[in-house]
Length: 310
Image (cartoon, rainbow, N blue to C red):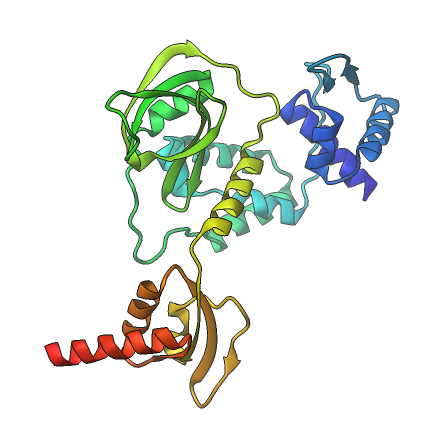
């Protein structure tokens, strides 16, 4: 276990560069004291790690040092070759480069490991698109990527933002969620915001550079923002009796319970009563409302109106 942690620590310093003990502890999910012991162990083993004192300091390695780590396990090989997301690479213009990189990686692997890589490529495919996929065209993606890479301020107009003039943002990262791209950026007051690229009405790259916040981690920010979004999302819990074939139309929030033949008791959570009513009516009798009572009344009234209109 400790050997694996030391390896992760070494790789983190090689790929992320200078990091504080607190940042390393958070990344490896251990205590700062454990990180300090592990850093001492790496130093004793001849790995050139050293600390930089003072404000903005941390631990780092000699710039030219690189470990030679070739012992990939079969599961590690599969995770590398199955994990690529084709449409994201295509949006970024990296699909051809990715294919060439994969070919080079396979050629560099030992014979046994190379077989595992070929098996993964030939037998596993991850398709992130849904059947009714509506892919958004990432119109401003290239410009936003340039701004993120070069740490230059963007002047953008966005959706329903007030004011006819563009406003400046400091782009910190790009996130692809299913088929939608988002820009994570800081406003001039320091607040972090997430912008959906399809809602940008204009974007212009300025000559004004900015300094990226030292402690900013894109994955951590995104996870926290998703939690905040779920917590603020409107909630309308319902209980339904649903036929077998219609269960997939709902997202149960608790384990389903069998009712009578071919029916299940499903607890779901939608945004409001109108959405819930529409969802039940769409099943054409394959879903019945158990609770709340107001939804029973809404569905009944709506069904009468539909019947009288037809």
